[in-house]
Length: 304
Length: 133
Image (cartoon, rainbow over all chains, first blue to last red; front, side, top):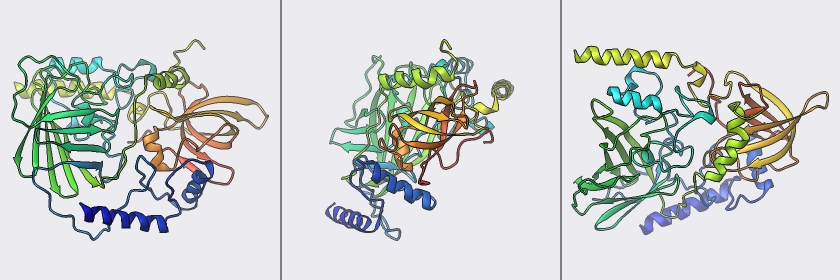
């Protein structure tokens, strides 16, 4: 842990010494203009900043990561290779709604009917902004599994002897996964994020089962539906010290004739403990302003 | 029997998808992603917020006529990685903007690129989404 901190500190200092883009606060126009001049002069080189505005130290390329610790997925996990890997604008990354036959989901008749009642504001079935009924556009909770399948960004995982706590960047929500062997309540009151229990199936893999979800949420940005009978399995597999993979499987016999994989070995890389996560929140007032200025006029739904 | 049933649904879903305009394939249905318009003028307001940042902009044409544009770009979490910030634009800044215009012809657009008088640029995407996938 200390070695990792020292390495990070050295990398940070080296980056600071050599990079003209480096600043700890982007608080004035000239600093931004300098960054833009850099961008304009040559093809833009992405500089990854954390939420505090500090550049993210990169480990040297020839460093072999240490072995994965046992029964430990804690840390600050950043989507890899880039911060936008988990946005999933077209729906679940392993099965986007892009019209390709291999991405066609095995809907039941009821599942297909429910899909058609969902009007997304992005993708091949998208409607005009003013006509969407995507609950997340209006800042309703994403719920499970959508918190993994839309705007999945830097994810912090904490562990205690009895539970794993996952803190998501988008909307600053958290989930508790109980690892104390308890069973899910019988006939639970639905929760947006469901009820999650987890079990280590080997030294490096935590398998999480979630049920009891509220059926008002969509599975993903494309509007795939789920019922209250939905069961979600997440497999968190720590490959080495710096790499975590997440696989999400959907099982909902009311909506789909068989289970399907929504996220397939989605990769995260470990950031240092000093990494600050940006705040990214769906604010009803900000959305209302957006809708008034852009969404409704662009849809031709205002009085003009 | 089961295979035929699945194939029937596959066909139905395929027909559903085929009937959706191609321009809705990627991104927001309100914009014409095959077209770009470039205008110059003055920033009136820059709103740094979710879900999308908004630039309000007075464009002046060659006759001196002013058109008030409302333009949107990405969300702050993505834009910061492309060099944008809350301080990127302020009222009074004179800039040139390229947008994908709204299909309904209103002065509304999705920003492709902002260019400052000194040549500095800000882009929403590395490659703008277009009609072709």
